[in-house]
Image (cartoon, rainbow, N blue to C red; front, side):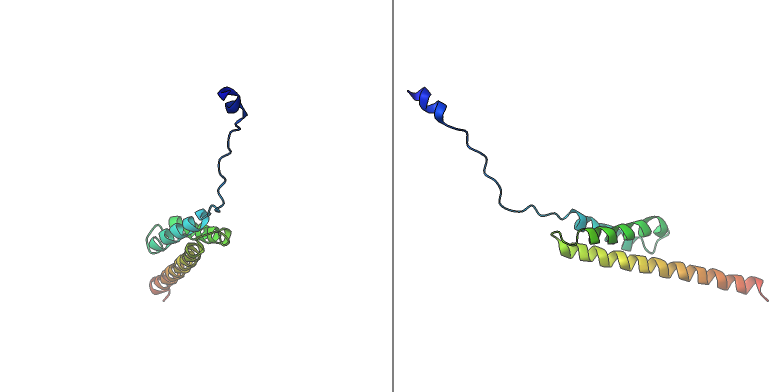
Length: 108
């Protein structure tokens, strides 16, 4: 009789999670890349590090703007923009310095 009762028992389903899994990947990556871009913006590697990290930080923060961790995405966006502005200012300053030295030594 016990065997008949055990055969009638159906396996229970695993309980479903009702909480939403928060996606923060783009925003965390954006913030980390923004920090890296800022740190390398005044070094000799700014062309190879700041430019790609700053651009990717901006793209990832835009991609993750509706996900969780929005504050990290905004931080990545701001840091990426600031790093690119510093990069462009240093680039302009470098070209200006080269033109001034050219005028100083070659134009009389």
